[in-house]
Structures are given as structure tokens and as C-alpha cells.
Amino acid sequence: MSDKSYAKVRYWIELDEWPNLEDPQKFTEKIQFLKIQEQPIMRRKAANRIEVREYVKKKVGSHYLIPLHGIYKKITREEWESLPNQFVLKANHGSGLLKIVFDKNQEDYKRVYKQTEYWKRFDYAEFGRERVYEDIPRRIVAEELLLDSNNNIPFDYKFFCFHGKVEIIQVDIDRFYNQKRKLLDRNFNEIQATILHPKYEQELERPANLDEAIEIAEKLSADFNFIRVDLYLLEDHIYFGELTNYPGGGFQPFQPESMEYKVGSMLQL
Image 1 (cartoon, rainbow, N blue to C red):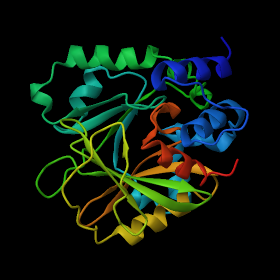
Image 2 (cartoon, rainbow, N blue to C red; image 1 turned 180 degrees about the vertical axis):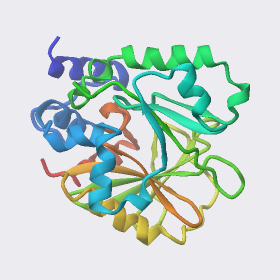
Image 3 (tube, helix red, strand yellow; image 1 turned 135 degrees about the vertical axis):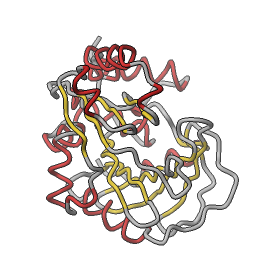
């Protein structure tokens, strides 16, 4: 099946409708279009967790990068022993392939080793037909574990950037437990819409460093017609998470449907 046929069929299976890929109007349709028609080198660099660090360093500075513990072809027993008690493991060649280690002494090394070896065999490019992941070296990246002042995983701020401008901010709360989301505009006014996860009903305080985060996101997105810039806004520092080419693979629409068209109109193909 061609990538275009795959996109149409999977879109129909997941969203119960056929996408218009000849004249896309909805946001998810335009993401499918980007996956099929537009795969420049810059998007491949954005998808590579190792290479993108150099891009971030050049654009905004290395002080926004999460400190690295190491990059490994495989997590050997020796490498495992050398890691600190807390850290995060991520696969270089895909999204969502990660493990948070809060206490290494409570982990089974053999199980972690098998998990990371499975990641390396997993063909993420074929899974979602996101060809920007093809030929990315299959490495395991170990990063410092970020925690907020309450020793919790910090909120994940995701900046939807269209033609170098932040238009939508998605905040993910309790991402690894009971995930909820809140959507806001660039002025931190709530948008009455959702994506996939339930709406976070409580008020969110505007982060003191939001303006700095928006500036970072817009600098990192300047070379793309669309990209999502994921950042962690801690009390005293901002850290870069990742650049996301195709949120949800283009299969997670905004609700209500009118929001799909509104966000889609922000992206000029």
C-alpha cells in the first residue's frame, strides 16, 4: 500500500471519514499532506533526537538543552551501572519510546535492556508512514530527569507554530498517570476545544517565563511552515523537549470539528 493510500485508509479507520488530500482544509488533513508531500532535510533533523540538539544549540543556545548522561548503541550492564539513580531513556528514532527511571535500584536491568532493544527493532517510520524517521541511527539517549519544585514530572508545554508564529499552546498535565490537556492561545487565554485527552478543568496560572518560551518556540520554528515545539517551563529554567513534525501522526483531530478547520487555515501549504 502506498503512503497516500495508507494515510487515507487509516484516517477512515480512526476518524470514520475519508480525508481530502487533494485540497486539504482540516488540520489533520494538512498534516497528512505534509507527511506525504513534504519531507525536507530540516524535518529529518527535527525527528532525530541527537541531531536536533545541535539545531537548538545554534538557534537559541545550549543552556536550553536537557543535560545528557549518554548516547548508547545498547544499554550494557556497564552502561547501566554508570547511570545515576534517576534518568530518562529515549529512543533516538521515534516518538513515545521512552522510560522514566525514578529509582534505578527498583528497576530490573534485564527488563529495561529488553525494552530498549525492542525500541531499536521497532520501525517507527513504517508504523505511521512518517518517512522523516527513516535512516535515523537507532540509539538510546539517556537524559537527566526533570522534576518540578514538588518533585513531580513538570507540565509539558507544546507550542503549535505556524509560519514561525506561536498560535496555540497545548499544556499536558499528569502525562504519565491521568493525562489531561488544556488548550490556550498565545496570550494564555483558554480555547474551548480538546485534542484526544479530557480537558483540564482547573485554571492554569500563566508561567512567569511564558514570553521567553514563546520567543524560543518561534526561533526554533522559523525554518518550518508548521512544527510543534515542546518545552518544559520550570520555575527557574526552560528546557527543550522535542520538535514534533506531525502531532498524533495526523490522526488526532481538534474537537469540535470547527476547530479543525480554524487551525487548518493557519497552515498555508
